[in-house]
Image (cartoon, rainbow, N blue to C red; front, top):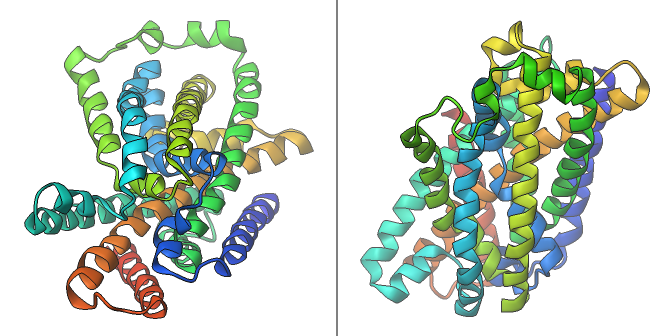
Length: 377
């Protein structure tokens, strides 16, 4: 466990350094809420990827894959379908250059639409943050079962998210995501062939699992497949965290180019996650993880990547990547409702002439309040 503690400590320290490095660049409302509209394509790709793939994919999607095989990709496929539409939306969103979805709603409709948009985002996004915290707490309990309970782990994750998000706002979130996205992509892609080999090779995996695990619909009906596809597609299309990234882009061209690479990255990483869970179902068909299959990725890293120093380090990096991914998604979905409270309520109705210093203080305060409530729920 010492190795895992060291790796997680290094990851947390690295993220803190990245966040602190951005503080000096945050002086105005635009700097805090949309990174001064300066994010290049490279940063946009990783922050979009990290904000989208969180507990829903790493825990819920992995559990589906453990139970049903590659048909679990119907869940990820909804996001891919939404991305194809977003390719045409991204440049227009950047051209509009606002801060939130309620900004768009008021421009298109009226103030009532803005307020309804704020309410919808607050309810939806705080719920999403809460299950990121729950998932992260479960992962920490799995790694340190005698030291950290699931509830304690939830509060630890909440503390990290508050600090990392509040330090420099969108700039902090975006540049941390470069580190997190790189770590997750490299470590999980490296782990897949090794775990497949330990499971007896692909031929043995296909023989040991039901044939439905490798079919398009698997043991789902078409309706069940669409029940996985449509919610993620609609969430992608209405994802305020995504629009905020487009508002933060350096240019319309950067926003459109980022979507192209985001599509490739999402398809690859979500496919790898599902494949890891399928391999894990062959490697660990019974035991503790069979009763808690949403933990299959972390469990496979703990118990499947060991035997020598290199494999143990890779296992620790995979777990660290899962931990960091949960933090990243929570950061993004916490930052969105906090932005709504500041931009769409405080500045729109209560203090439209507030100074930049006051705006930054209020923004950080709202992040703390929202996260504290979610951690205690």
